Length: 272
Length: 272
Image: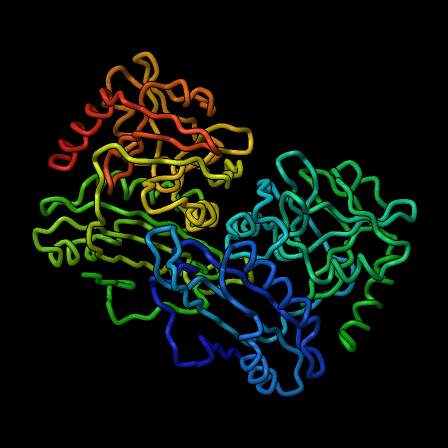
């Protein structure tokens, strides 16, 4: 069930000179199809639009609309994943983009991966995230930090790796955002300097009660926390049962806010 | 005169699921062909090999040898540029690489771009380089910082943009390394935290007299310097005649060490 449309056509090739391949010069989104609906569609397209503005990439994500319609139809009534990717196309003088950019638009349909809603094992990655405010928040194609971190997986029983910056602040999971609960206070890391500002993270920031705070969080604070979960707009809410950091393991048994977040996500799948 | 071989064959396609496109998960090299020889070939392949080790990419750059032979033949006796690019291929679970990686190898032949050997205008970019020691030095495919900087070009009369890190240290040009001469002392920026360790930079570090120092350099030091040049193993030595920083311009009239570097490069084109 993997269909790929390149500039609207399954028969189009990717140029080996595409700047997405040469420089990671582009953006992507992964979206959840649930019960025949694309969840958080407007939010995903808005984030891609913001990313295009940040990169100076002249592209309107609404160009994906016919592709979305076609792939949604192809999904039948099965839950699935949609991936949208845009690059600055081929051309330009080295790093300098061409004046007449023709972006490359790739839309693809994938099966929904296995989803864990019960307590999961997580670990702290050695790979750190660099501070780069010019690229923070957007979902661009320069993902080597995540690729490096993903090679640290201790074994397949772990569900997510937690990434810190070089100032020892927690930022996010390799493919998710992070929420922490301590004494009833909910917080999530500040992403001004690095990290991807997730669509589900933003939804939870607006919907959770009490309202979460955006703060700097370090590892000792995480070890003192009562509750911890990751979120991802495809995979939903991932409760953390244990966190491995070096030789130390912290177990989490409280999941009160996590259950609230899961309930909000279930509603979002039907209405957002 | 652009020929592209993908895994050794001009007819092979690039998969839209290639991790080079999805995550910038790979490396590249650009090499100069001069008088029927590939200049610094061993050094370029060694840097790619070091990059593969850093990224955990199981690939031996000597796999490019038949491609190199074919493209060198195709170049006739014309000076030209060879680009080698390797990615982790398609597959894997999201960011996690597949266990059975089949790398994608792309070799292409391009015309030599126009080359400037006389004094050139340079400017200081607003875009900064992030500190990421895990990726510093190698020539990976995550190049959005350079793409952003390359959109700042004031006009076509400028030949290179100079990039600083967030600690106000000079690091490199958008597509070159930097050498500075002050009171007869030669130095080039430290690249432990960011930047690409250029092949020609390394050659000049070994060959220039007096021996250059690797140091931290800030903008005031550059404005006090007598002489400034960029180096790139395709474009050679680019003497800087003026540097624009904000509203200020510094002019450089001394080119003694630059001439020495140009002479070394001319020799390298024939012997390295």
